[in-house]
Every structure is written in structure tokens, then in C-alpha cells.
Length: 475
Image (cartoon, rainbow, N blue to C red):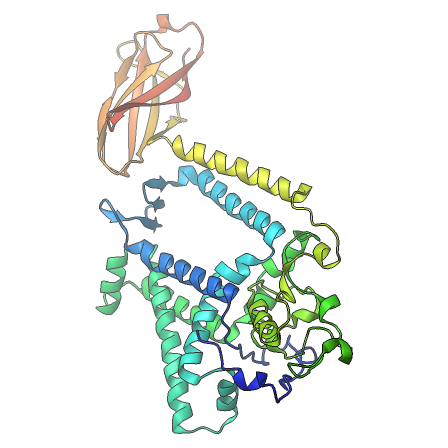
């Protein structure tokens, strides 16, 4: 996005004060007060755009990456399987998913405690999509001042086509977002073909329309309202802040007393600080706040005001950094502490959770077995005089190939297996197998004997064995 031309505002013959409504007096909690975000270029704005493009490209491309005979990332709800490249998470492995969510939570806590709300400013989907929608606004309706004038003008052909083109662009991006999101749950090739040939299911059409309208509404109309009034993170993030957390801060000792002046004027003679009160920091803020009023929960740490202020300071010949990433302690002249108990605690828990997740992922058994005893009869004596117990085995093949499985019992001597003890189970199949185990009463020293039923197979040249405890009842 290109910054607006500000050359005439900084001529040597004019004052730099840009007369705009006082944002501090406006009711910024009223959703009807629209914020016209001014374009700005700078270090932090460029970084935010690049990170946004990376996040967007990852989101769009992941469903199209092939992995064997499926896509690399596929949340197969119908079969209750989550495929993430070579890892398949089954309902029986939901502890992995819980650990992943806990890692994400503690990573957010750790980063917030150290760097503030950089997640909101640089990688939050609401921020990424909002700035992309603003980019379309700038391309089709012009820079900030032109957009304000366009909205104040009566309806004309020029206004109609610009507004129409903007909303078509918004809806097109929203539709692409919705199709991509649905592609994480339904194979991407099927989604696009079925939707455009009108062969998709009603559920697919519902979610495509739902997420299209949700994206269009959130990034096109609601924007900062989502951040200020609906996002819970803005409410509880203050619990993670301390005086050593990096925030976007205004150096009031250097900036006050603020006021306009000519570029070559001596601010000390005028009794003014470095802030020329140009209000550019307010105009570029996506949530419409004035960072000079101090730390506010609405600030998303995007750094746009830093870039705007640095440009002004550079043109005035003043040192940069009047607004910067800093800490409350640094602003007050107190030495900053990087390591503190809260940050260390979050870091330790995060590392532990990552190690647990790695270990759990590496030790996922490719086969799972559950044993259900016959509850109608503890045991019976068959026509051969053997004591017989009946079980139902549920064997899950968690791999993506068919394999042969062999079953056996440990804990009983000279037992007899009734039913198939070698079976072939297809990929992802759960086999329900009723079997019985019989043993001579002479071999039973107790009325209840602890046993283990084992399942053995060979996967990728490795011997895999899974066992499950149960009990054998006798007289």
C-alpha cells in the first residue's frame, strides 16, 4: 500500500499542523464512527505487510500440498481423523490436540509478556484481512482524504462504480477465504469442482456462504469493533503485561508541550517539545486511538504510529523514536529487566509442553486395541469341558495401508483360541472381532486370572506389538 503524499504539509513556508477532528474527543466506542486509516510506509508497516502475505500464502497453499494420496493438511471430520503432513491424529489421540492448544496458549502468553500484543498487530487474521481490505479501498477509492470526500459527496456515477468495485473485490476475497477454509475439511479439489458445478452438499454451500459473509462483515465493516468489543484477548491481555513488557509508547517528557511550528523554528525558544501535533499517529492507527494518551488496551502494537512519527521527525530534523517500541520502565527512566518470574514461568511451561508434544507424537502407536468383556456371562463350560470367556476386540489400524495382525494371550497356559487369530485390517478401519478363550480348569489356580491380549504386526519393517490387560474368570 502506498503512503499518501504529505509534501505540501511540510513546506518551509507553512505550518505543519494538519487540522483534523480531535480523536481524543470523538466517541471511538460508537461503532458508527468510521475510521479512515491513512496509508504509511516504514520499517514496521513493511514488516507487518510481509508477515501478512506470508500468513495469507500459507493459509491458501496448505490445502493444495499433496501428501501421498491425500492433501497434506486435512481435518477429516467424517472419519474423525486430523491429517497434518505425516501425522494422523485420531479421537483416541486427542491429548495431542489438547497439548497443541496448550502450546499455542502458553506461546501467546510468553510472547505477550515479553513483546506485548504483537500477535494482534502482525499475525492475527482479523488484522491481516482488515489491512488487505483497506488496500482495496485505497486502490479503488483513493487515499484517506479522498475516501473521506467521496463518502461526503452525493451519489454519482464515479461514486457508484468505485463503491461497487470495492465491494466486489471484498466479496471475491471473502469467497476465496471461505473456499480455502472449507478445503481444510473437504478435499480441496472436490470443493472447487463441486461448488462451481453445483454438485456440492448443502453443508458445504452453507459454510462457504457463512464464512464469505463473516469475512466480508468482519474485515470490511466491523474491523476495529472486533478488536475493541468482541475479542476476549484485548480484555485479559493486561493480566500478562508488566512494566517491562514492550509496548508502543510515546515519550511525553520529550514530546510535550506539543504544538505546531515552522520547520526551522527553535522549539526551545517556543517552549515546545518535539511533538508537532500533526495527528498523523492517529490517522494511521487502525483502531483510531491517540497513542499520546498513554497505554490503552485498544492498541494492537502494529507500529504504524511509529512509522508515521519517525517520518515526521525525519522531516523536521529531530531524532527518531518519539513514539517507539519501549517499556513503561524505560519511559520512566528505570532499568529494564528482561528476565522476570512471570516470563521465565511461561517459558518453562512452554518448553515442557513442547517436549511432551514431541514425545507423544513420536510414540503414537500405529495400532490400538480395546477389549470389551461379555457382561451377560462371566464364564461358561463348553462341551469340551473347558472354561470359556468371551471378549469383543476392537482393533484400529491407524496407518494408511492395510496390515495383517496376529493375536495371542499371555497369562494362561495351554489355552485354546476360538475365532480367527490372524486378520487383515484395511487402512483406517476399526475391526470388531468377537472371540473366545478356553482353558482347562486344572490350569486355573484362582477364580480370577489377570491376562494380557496382544496384537502383533509388521509396519515398515518394524515389529509392532500392542497389549491390553483383561481378566479371565473361572469357577
